[in-house]
Image (cartoon, rainbow, N blue to C red; front, side, top):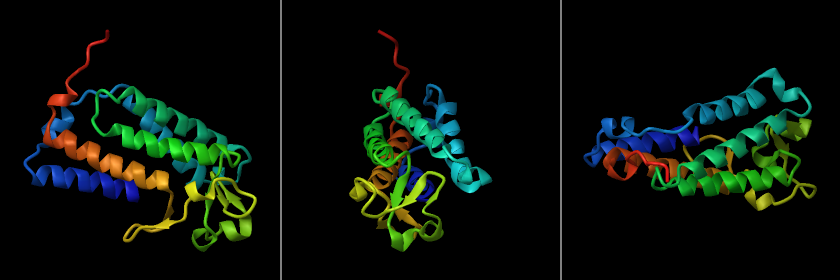
Length: 177
């Protein structure tokens, strides 16, 4: 929800300040299906019966590695994408430090309180690592809890889309060296 809100805000503010959707459509992304596949893996690991399968969290971890690699690959193509990379990397670090699971603060944990872990999430506590990087931030009107990494990803998405809609010139096709 937070990421969709950030994407929407970036687009709306870009359009309100004179940008055009055609500017965004003119950008030629490399391997865009990689990001889509990573998002599908994430949602499948949480929202389907797969969330009860042992080891499903590692599929999410691999998907997150793919997203970080994709954003790094697009640094010269998309201004502001480094903020998304930073946020995704922070999430990757905390998830890797906790057996491929993101710690969630108990007040936001819902069914995690009784189950301990669901998909790629685990209940935050003294046995989890790097809790400061886990999901503990509440952002209204978005439901749920978010991590520092999530906030950076959302901010980065809004900035990237705003800049892409406003000014396509820095996003011209790069020629390989």
